[in-house]
Length: 216
Image: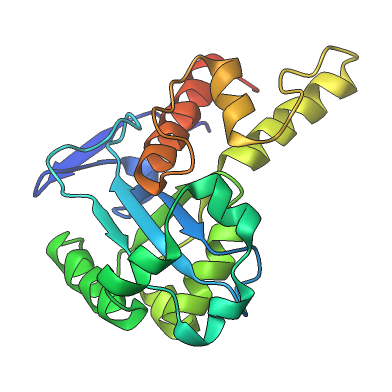
């Protein structure tokens, strides 16, 4: 029997019933490269969403710049820095270190006042990338304490492309990147490669995907 859409609200948190009191949050990280063993998160944004997948403005998002690990500065990928337009020297001099930001994330998570044992369901574009860096930053045990499952817009658009291909129809998404997905869905990303802007744009893209594509 198919479930019926419903939602609940407690402490300013609006969740869909099938989320089982967990909270979907859009997540994006900007990094110094693509390898979590030698590159670092230098900006993170975690944005709580309502059951209708809009930003929950009653909950403060988590957003911080993070100083890169001094031992990893020799590995910084110039292509990544050109994309995110962040200044390594400025971050090194002004941003907090990753462990301090991890402590602040724990404090922020506790203030969400989720029910006992409930967690964040991350929503991202290409979540395996975000996961690899979040897991490296927090450690597996801490990661598992904060997060449960995930939603991934890249997986969704690949699924839709597969459906179209199976039925000999044009692919709805010719490319997989966030910019192309935003353009296809009519979503404005005001500051591409800024963690907060990318997270909000990803959330809106996911909302549009849910609204526009019915696959059953």
